[in-house]
Length: 196
Image 1 (cartoon, one colour):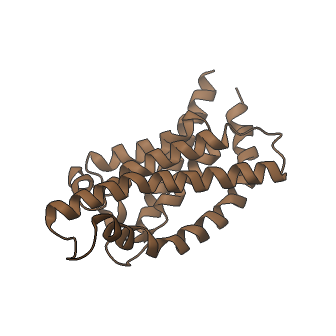
Image 2 (image 1 turned 60 degrees about the horizontal axis):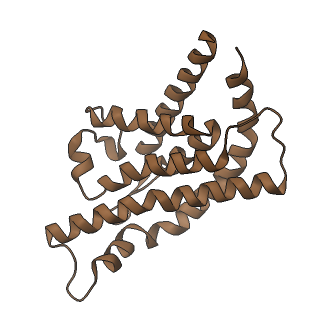
Image 3 (image 1 turned 90 degrees about the horizontal axis):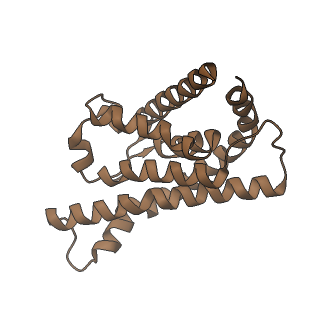
C-alpha cells in the first residue's frame, strides 16, 4: 500500500510540473494569452481520472499561489488571482476535475472503441467549457470594476470577445491533439497506479 501511495504522489507531482511547463509556452494574443496550461490541466486530469485527476492542477495552483512563478508568463502569488485572468486559474482546477470525473479512472484493459473516444471527447469539451465559466465571470467583474467595458458593448459581449472567441480555434486543436494522447496513455498510467 505504501508503494502505491508513492506512485500516486509521484504522478501528481510530475503532472503538476508538466502543467507548470505548459504555462511558459504562450502565444500572446489580446488580453488572455494562448497557453498549453489549460489543456494540460484537462489532459492530466483525464490520465489519472476520478477525484485524483484534479490533484495535479490543485498542486500547481497552490504552488503558484504561495509565490512560485509557475503561472503564465512566469507569474505567481495572490496578485495573479486578482488580475483579469485570475478566474481562469480557478477554472483550470474545475475543468480538470470535470474532465477527470467524466473520463473515469483508467484501467489497463481500456480499449479504443467509439464509446471510449466519445467519453473522452465529452470529458475534454465539458472540461474546457467549465474552465471558461469562472474565467469569464471574473474577467467580467474585473472589466466592470476597472471601467474597461467599451461604450455601447455589454460586459458579456466584451468578455466573450476578449477571452473566448479568439481562443476557440486553438482550444479545439489542443483538444483534438489531446484526446488520442489520453486514450493511448491512460492504460499505461493505470498499470503503474495498479501496482502495489
